[in-house]
Image (cartoon, rainbow, N blue to C red; front, side):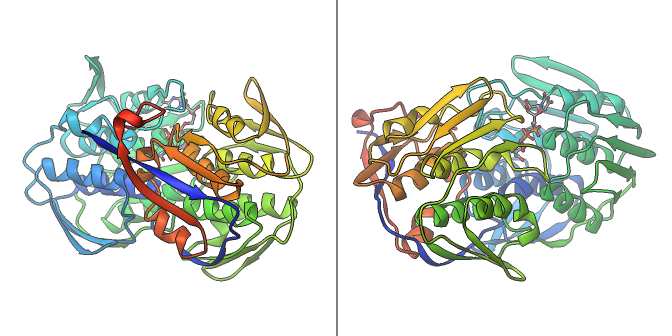
Length: 434
Ligand code: UD1
């Protein structure tokens, strides 16, 4: 009989203590495929131990890279004997970020064939038209057949690329394709997320010439050769933000370590607005909440605005705070699916177009719920930690994509949460892969 896993949470415990943050998922899923741009040896530290990373490493191995673990968070990758530029379909379909293989392989071999990515889709379409437009600007021919995208060029030539919408993925993909192109590429209206800066720093250590990452104009001078290097990935801003909100929601007191406080500014500012104390140290933040917080309004925006990947978690906090809050997501069209689950626990939230009107309630009641996607799953955990009684979260496969050791980390600060096997036939919700 097939078994699946769920989280069982006995809520009502105040989180107190210290949590260590892992490496950034969204930086790592770009940096790992970037190793394909050189035939070399890499040592990469602060790699998060999560499912998206094991998926990406499996893909690299299937292509001929040799991957070995130095420790739980440090790996060696040897790309000297990559034999195949073909990416196995079975391995890409569960990983949204597999689209970075397009940019990396196009940049290295002038040809890339990758199946359209899987991963979280927030209930809507996640287009990659901007990525493809960027590749075309560099001289690539694009075709799609049976869900597989092919990009090929005789030789990529640097060009000006203007994005009419800010896109993290398209910015990263064009950087990957342009680092070895002939001449200069200028990306205008580029995304400015910390993981874009991290990728650019990594590529520059490999011998690339990228300037302006972190601003909206990025200039890339193509180089002919790149080489292996040693690198340490930045801490995960969203994992840190999730635990900051968990501390606030449980009226707790958490010291969150291994973070870059500057990356957390938009989250810290909103927590303070709600009545939390947020203290910043060199590489840690401490979040303390002594009573019920009050609501605030949130609008998600590209960095340095409030991150859409923190929207479900923060909305959960607002649903337990005093007064009415309005949350609007201007990045994704349909990122409020999880609200149905929160409603089962007693939340009062109304969706109007791209906004949620949140009427704070004093408490939630535990219920069986599911993780619709990665961050929706994180929101369910926060809701369960605060709820009276027991919350069971199904479809936790989504949460495992992006949160390392979530049970261990939360248990160490006082949560009662367990991972439990149960027969798939008893699942209330269909278990799907991300
Ligand atoms: C990345 C993050 C994801 C986060 C998102 C926004 C990774 C692996 N994932 O996703 O967690 O929620 O940034 O911060 O880093 N768009 C287009 N055409 C395109 C590409 C995007 O219209 O070709 C639109 C999208 O539909 C969306 C917006 O642009 O409305 C932003 O998307 P984008 O920044 O590209 O998100 P991802 O890179 O996919």
